[in-house]
Each structure stands twice: as C-alpha cells, then as structure tokens.
Length: 251
Image (cartoon, rainbow, N blue to C red; front, side, top):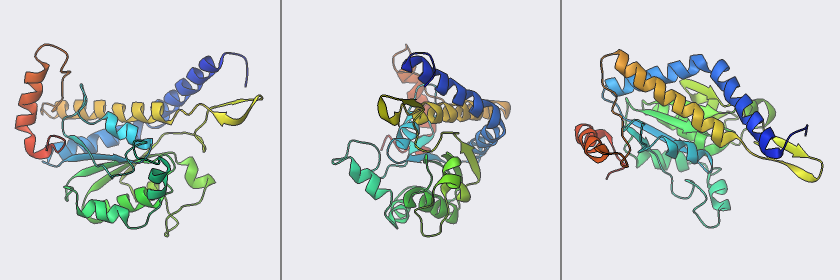
C-alpha cells in the first residue's frame, strides 16, 4: 500500500471506481434509464433484487426520498441481508437450484415489468436463474454486476453462464474479484470493500436518468419526498394513491 492513511487510500480507490463507472458506463446508464422510463410510461412495474450485501443497493432505491415510488423490492426470505441466523445461510441459499423459479412464481412480477438484478459476482445459481426466469416470463432485466468475475471465476450455475449473459442491459461496477481495495504488509488478507459504494451510486445515477427521461416525455416522474420536510407526507400520499396498483411495499 502506498503513502497515505488507509482512509485516504480507500477514498481514493472508491473515487477512482466511481470515475471509471461514470465514464465507461455512461451509455449503459442512459439505456437503463430509458428502459425504466419506458416501463413506467407503458404501465409496467419496477422491481429490484439483490442477495446478501448486493441487497443493500436494491433496498437503497426502494421507498426512498428523492427516488421513484414505483421501485419495489423483490425479497427472497433468507437472502435479503445478514439479518438471518446464521448469516452464512444466505450465502448457501444463493447456490440453491430452483429457488429463483419458486420466488418468481409466487411474486407479483408479470410480463411488461422490469427487474433490476444486483449480484457482484453474477456466478451463483440464484441471480442467474432469476434473470433467466424473468426474461422467460416477459420481463426486461437490467443486471448490475462486476464483469471481471466472468473472466476470472467459474459459474456455479449448471449452464456455466453468468448473470451478465441473461440481461437486456448490463451495468458493470468495475469491482475487482474479491471486493477488497487495500492491502497492507501487516494484514494477511486484502480489505476495504467498495462494491456497496459504487453499486449504490451506479443505481442512483440510473434513477436520476429515469426521472429526467420521463420529464423529457412530458410525464411527471412519480418521485417520493422526504417525510421529514413539511408537506412530504401529503406529497407521498398523493403519489401512492395515483400509483397504488404498482406499489407493493405498502401491502
């Protein structure tokens, strides 16, 4: 590790990744925003899914002040985060064949909707089958993943494929395999993961693009306001009443 405090070096690494994503994924971000805008304009619904820590980025765009009210979380019990005990169960469930199909069959997703799937490695059975199953059901799929994993690891799905192979649009987070940005001679393992910082920023860039794309079409974006500002609750109540049939986190 070069000169500088670990904190400085982590910030430098995260900023470098954010700059790469901004510059190299601009076209994909625009396309993803346009796809979500198309879905909203056509009466479809929006969903986000992630397992383990990838779920943090999915949760960040759901029921969020300044965010799209129509973004719903597709939750799979046991894999949403580290709230399950033991936490390692979530990692095991990501590798279970057939789980994604059961989730999709019992979810409100339908043809014409769009599903954002977040998986850093994109190699486990759950995100691969989720993408395959969603597209087979007539949904559009946006994948958020690190493409590097497909070149440096092997798939854990029977097809030998990765999440990136089954998406309409792929957003590459540029995270290195292992998700640890720093090394130190006195520490035996690499440390300081940046995937949450980068993936969350990447998705918020897509949400901003979607809102602007809707406005360009003369459609008021269904945005939420903070409940901690005057009038926020009233604003959100009107939005939810207007789009209640496409919002599932209130049910």
